[in-house]
Length: 83
Image (cartoon, rainbow, N blue to C red; front, side):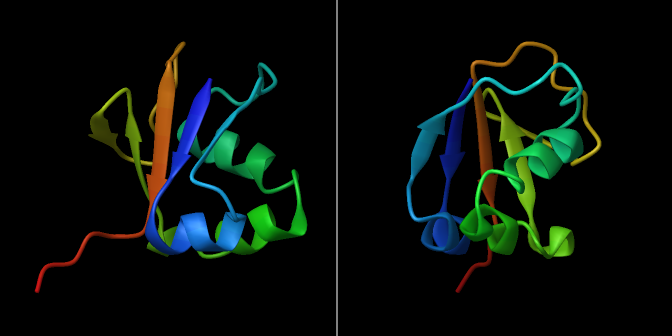
């Protein structure tokens, strides 16, 4: 699975994308983020405030409790703001 990180999440993790093989227990976006938070201290910091996290699965915005199925790509990012 390809994970994409954007904006402050990208800065905290230290990369814009990575390929991962999550465990079967990572069946929702929340569970995937829980697992990713164990990868490194930088990942844990990036995902510490779930209220400031949004997700897209295969290009579609989804809530964090959405089931993953077998996605090719998951994007994680802070709320989008306009200006």
